[in-house]
Length: 329
Image (cartoon, rainbow, N blue to C red; front, side, top):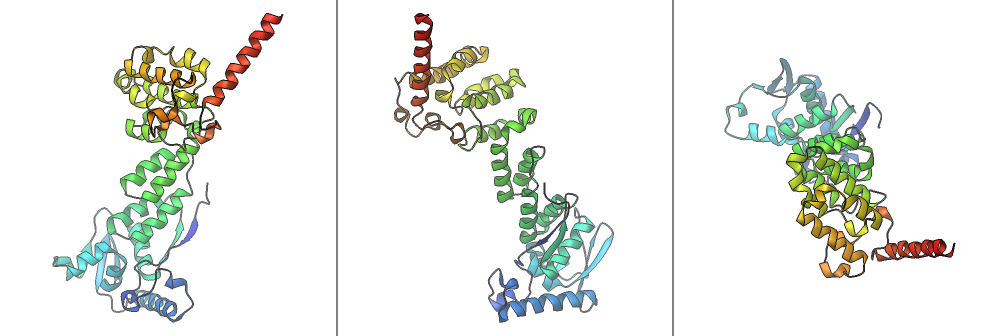
């Protein structure tokens, strides 16, 4: 878990009014050349004008609080304000603009960003709310910064909700970070996984990066999800098992726990997958016979060789050695 409040510097993505005229690259605010100095000067000048309440030409209202600003600065930083002030809407000429669904604290931070290019003091009490506001008012750099901060706070207790949040607000980098975290820590999520919708669970099961010590754990994950609501989910078991790599489940487990599972025994599509695994383990089926099929390659986390069948040769050798020992005594 990161620190409770971290200062976050956002590369000024559309802050300076003079940017397009200067044709500056995205990181010019940190450069030491003439263009970087001009941009810093523009920031400082605009910030000073706002602090002095000089040349303000619009008042933005949210939650009963009023914020004086300059249309040009807001339009440079935000697609929302650019459309508002540059179009034919009445707000383009209005002296007061009222925003709905935006918290005053979040608006204050967004306006500070518009004038300084910085977002400071992100913490668990503000980051998600600020991201929502940045999404609504189209401050992409702030949205990206909040997403990056939230990605550093991922833990088993919040990863699933964070992926939901990221997908709801179109934050692909945060969604991908949460997805990878879940794959790495799937064994720590426990009963949380039982509430997942089918597509989300399938996205984890089909991923090579699912971190399970043995493929049996992937089967158990699928089965626990079905058992959480058997009436509704039992018909979905074939879809789940299609992404469990049964050929790499140990033989004794395949017999005792997969074949012995009543839901599998009553399901012809599941039985076909079970037979495929048996054929593979008995060397009656080569993994290339199924084309580019993920079921026919082990997950990296299991440490098995990619052909898979060496595992079962070792198991067979152990069985023969054990029988020889018993018969010899």
